[in-house]
Image 1 (tube, rainbow, N blue to C red):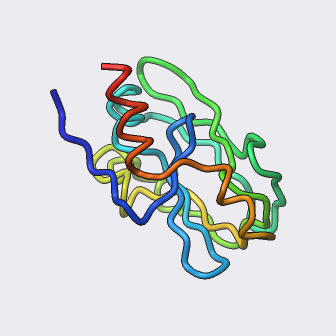
Image 2 (image 1 turned 135 degrees about the vertical axis):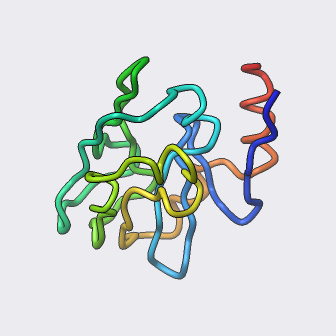
Length: 131
């Protein structure tokens, strides 16, 4: 049984994305739990900078040797940065999905949407129910 890194200051989606908020910039990635469930990531389809997404909208696809999954935007806003290094070397997302394996950064339109996300205690309960 793994002990997952679930920072208390991050927000989470029920689809296993994490969101780290720094003022109006939100860094988005997949949780360690999601990475472990997927297994080795072999393909990523990430958006272009400047793309706009609504909260809950699909912004990309992540594929592993086991499955393909959609990636969902935790907030509405504009993509201001894409971790393009992952496209050449996916080991960062496999080895460190909660840090260097981040996917995109979004300039958030409204902080009010953060209330629709879950916090660390609720996320821990969500994944403990799946074990």
